[in-house]
Amino acid sequence: MDGLVPLADMGGKLEQYFQDNRTYENACGVGGLAPAPAETIRFKYKCTLGKTTYTVTAEGQGSMSGFAFTLNQQGQRATTSTPAGWTAGSNCWSARKDGSC
Image (cartoon, rainbow, N blue to C red; front, side):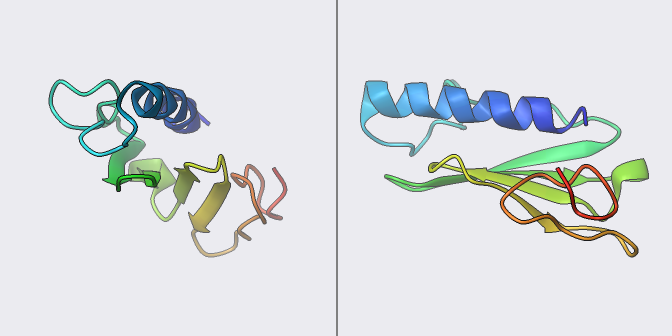
């Protein structure tokens, strides 16, 4: 899904920022190394940052409404929301209705 490539890319940028600064704080801010990707017709993105933690979220909109995918500092991928009729996969970004990845 096109919304997940920018999410994965952000993970790499956030790790680089942490190596350079020993914190994730301000990484997604203006001038930060990992600004949230631009909103698309299918997804909008959000960063939640702490000193040693982060969660980046791709929230579906339009034809992807109801989906939400996250990535954290441990590299854990999660499907945190799905529309009716879909199953959220375990420890992955669900790509199919049955929750498989």
